[in-house]
Image (cartoon, rainbow, N blue to C red; front, side, top):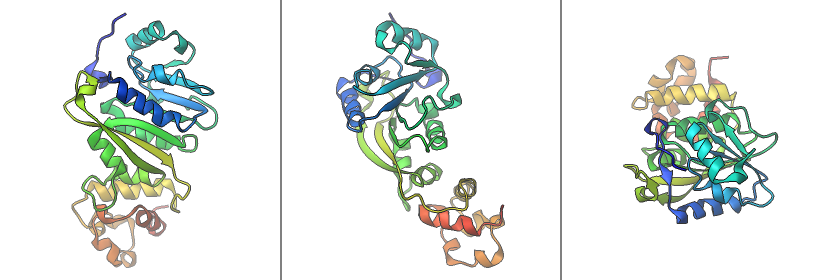
Length: 253
């Protein structure tokens, strides 16, 4: 049974068995009791995940053709396949579950934000991204890749960059390198006024990242607070903890 690749869905299918095995091993070592794969595509990784012992596994696939292909090629996936858009999905399990996937490049950041919404249930994520996106997620203050995605993710997860994946590992080969990361939920999330305040502050600060913090977020703070020398810095120079601490001084309710 054949399938076609759909550029509109950002599809680049992994065919390098060494990489598939390497990703599967990095998941299996965590002994997940519940596991969700996002975008299994042609099942390169799925076939390994289906073999995990004592793991309740589900896969989420939007593309009709791939759903039919998976059901035909891997009968074991029957009743484990959710034919839906991951970005519109409710949590597929009760309790904790791990998220894994070779994420479609065009929605990979949105997948991260979806996982952040579910963070109370998702202690772990292993994902393949375009390398530049993976580096943004794992970036630290002062790094040119450090931005909104870095701060909002790193406030709640510790990210480990596992390894590079070359274009030749995919069909069709993308024009860029890929990277696999592991995100583990933090037990020491910094105190903040609220997640809503934190997101608003971070997004506003980085939307004008060339400006000093004082100029970028001026309407959010009173004049006395703005005298603090911290506001002389630019957004990329502030740590997660500094952003979190500033939320308590915001004027917004």
